[in-house]
Amino acid sequence: MKLEFESTVNSDSATLWNWIISKRGINSELFPLVYMTKLDIFSTITAENFEPGKVIVSSWILLFGFIPVDRLRITPVEIVEGQHFIEESPMFTMKKWRHERYVIPTQNACQVKDIIVFEPLAFKTIVSIFVKLLFRNRHKNLRKKFSIVK
Image (tube, rainbow, N blue to C red; front, side):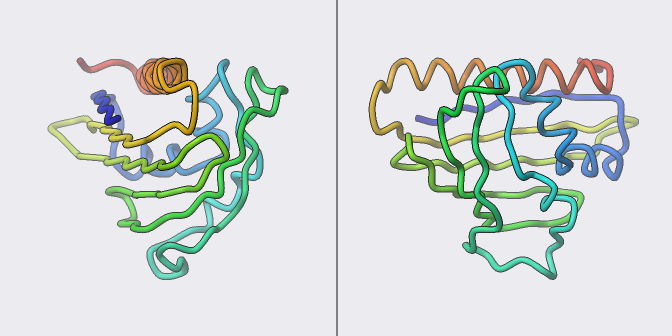
């Protein structure tokens, strides 16, 4: 399945990039549906110090912040600082998981675009609905944080 989400927010690209790769930013976007552990590593990843396809950390995905529902082995395959990242991270519940996130500067704002391609191992309909809900929530929280442009 492939899902796409876009939001335009009031932010410059540097500020927005630093937010979306921070532990606080990621978990603020995911709130209140899930919380991810061990995300501090993101703020130290640069295009120069990561190896494409190498797991940088294993993170528990906690439903409502306390019920472990999955484990994500975060594996970036491409990073262009300030512009985009692509991760293809193994998960217990997925045959395939690919998340692309783009920060696109526009006139006095930035657009954030997420493309998610995934294939659940089981409960495909339920998992698909949850992933869609999760990313809608992420974008809602992102627009709330940086104010909606459109």
